[in-house]
Amino acid sequence: MKYLKSIISISCLATAALLIAACGPGEQDDGVITITGNDQMQFSPTEFRVAAGSEVTLIFRNIGQMPKEAMGHNLAILPQGTDPQAFAQEAIRHEANEYIPPEWDDRVIAATRVLGPGEEETLVFTAPSEPGEYPFVCSFPGHTPAGMWGTMTVE
Image (cartoon, rainbow, N blue to C red; front, side):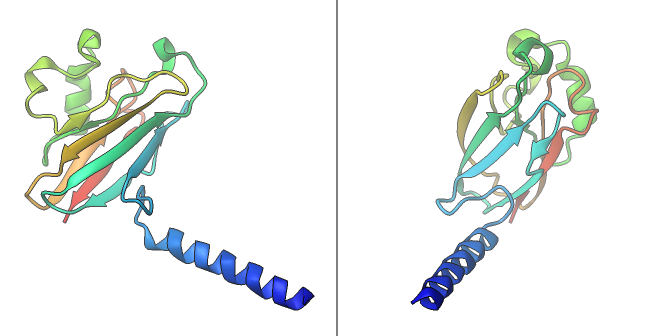
């Protein structure tokens, strides 16, 4: 009986590992993508995949501890071909618009507000119909240049 319990436990662990491995970066079993931002100015994961034209649900969480004024995070998904650094440089001047340049309001695919520690926001949007790589960034001042950016791949 002792060996049977061990085999069952190992079998359950292996099944759980297979289920986790079957999901792409940032994707969960229910199709919801979860991305976190931390006090080290890092997204996790830094890439995820979606089907062209599909409805996407993305949860963004600030898991950091530092105050929003010093280490707030947002997540903005940009059009294909956008230079993340150039976008972030323009965004610095637009605190009142959650660090999204107003002239980009109709071009940004989806964006959260700036989140403080422990906050989260859910985005629901339609993925672009054109396959390719679409950058996402945290446009809080200094975060994109520090490496807080990633890629949404549309397939």
